[in-house]
Length: 329
Image 1 (cartoon, one colour):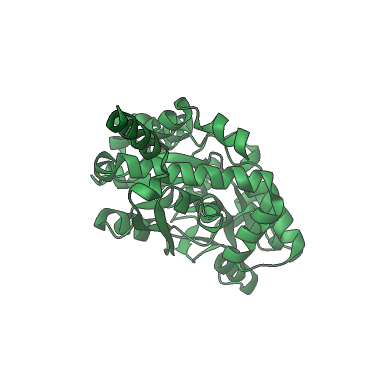
Image 2: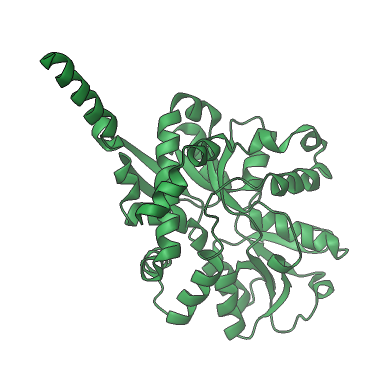
């Protein structure tokens, strides 16, 4: 009887052990650029939530979606932050790529232009800067130009110009005449006298901007790690939305800014809008697929579920994790 009782107690204790007591996994997570949209991953790191689930997560800033995808496919990174268009383009190229969570499920951009440009049509014959070809800014720039009767590449030259700070500087210096900026950076552009020609967040787009990318093969082999990673990120999101001081510290450290007004704008646009349950926006993925199919017919044969896998997030929500987390924070 004593041995039976001891075994029962040990079983209960083992089941209650945190994930890190069972196994610790070290990994790199690729951040597609320096942007406030990386905040969910960074909050998981800074708040110790990944460590809570036995993950030693090392963020690694990369220079665009193509670099991030390459690192993911090579196994250098286990997960990446990536735009929906980046995942779709990789899938169309026959790569093993899928989005397993959606963190920014709308288009958080403004198309900003130099002072002398007052409307979209004025961009004809001008240069427009994006981060990298195939990324979200590239996709949205081409979409907007075509909606206004301008042919990308012919009527408007599209150039790879770097991250948000580099693109803003390029407009100010006259190297390009327009660019897409995330809203917190667009706020700074307005202070310099630049104009917003189009605010994508107000045009009613169903859009999947940023999310967490992985390979299906990695998730198949490391299902538990995927669950633990998403739990840590979800707790980071929850903490930021409940603790503004913590959120500002995360954003300030990553973006290397300390201007209170810029931090306020970043919080309003990039933290308050984060989803409590980070499902991939499948309607947004369909919009991307339908638009890409206009130039690449292969996209017409792909279902949103092939590039956006909500099974892990669904499993976490169905377990009651969200309710338990809310009750203990």
